[in-house]
Image (cartoon, rainbow, N blue to C red; front, side):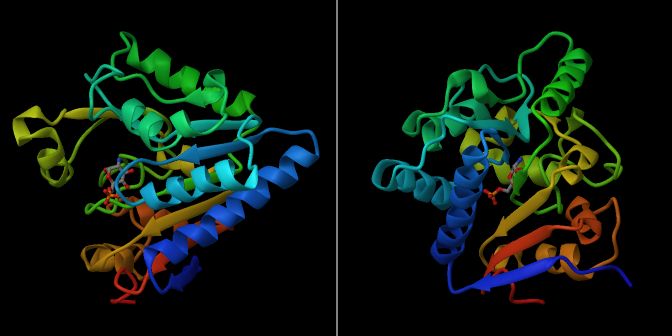
Amino acid sequence: MTRSPNVTIFADKAAACRSLAAELAKLIRETNATGRSVVLGLATGSTPIPLYQELIRLHSEEGLSFSQVITFNLDEYLGLERQHPESYWTFMHRQLFDHVDIPAENIHIPSGTVGDVAAHCAEYEAAIEAAGGIDFQLLGIGRTGHIGFNEPGSPRDSRTRRIELDPVTREDAAPAFGGLDKVPTHAITMGCGTILAARRIGLLAFGAHKAAIVREAIEGPVTDQVSASFLQDHPDACFYLDRAAAGQL
Ligand code: GLP
């Protein structure tokens, strides 16, 4: 018997994102009150956009400051310049960083154009450790069950590294890139082990198209074929679902 992660089912994605944003705001305020920075692991994709919008609202309307927040993004496409419209660097700045008071030096996103990928990945791991480890890691889930870009076959103890994208993942990204041939074939991703080292983990999934993979992640066997299933063995992992994504549980 594996231990089930904590699952909360919300009426809709707006309610889920409001709840998680409030939780993150509390974490930021309480940690900053002790004089420490908060370390957040952040995710891309369409799923966390309403969460980022709510965090921006909390910043502009309720004084939530990101001046002592340090962030590490999960992943980046290899071969894309920062300024590419589909880079995760562009995504994060458009969706969150340009609208809050986070210092630029506190933002960490793997480089898609670095020469020595292995050295860059080792530096990324070292930077997470130097920051004190990740307090809260935000995740989405891909159709292959990936977290970050940990495609099927990613070992539980894997760390930040170069990975070949699954054909399913590239197919899902094709519309945004304007064609499958324009989707990068590789990425840099934090590993499953990097993610599982976070003190708390929150996975967001919304919509009926996520229901089957959400069921596999929560109720299926713990397997490297569905990297999100590793969350079953984490002491503080929570799934924030809407009713549709929870429809097969
Ligand atoms: C990409 C990202 C993942 C994300 C997934 C799902 O593969 N690397 O971090 O969870 O897409 O995207 P969406 O939220 O748009 O369904």
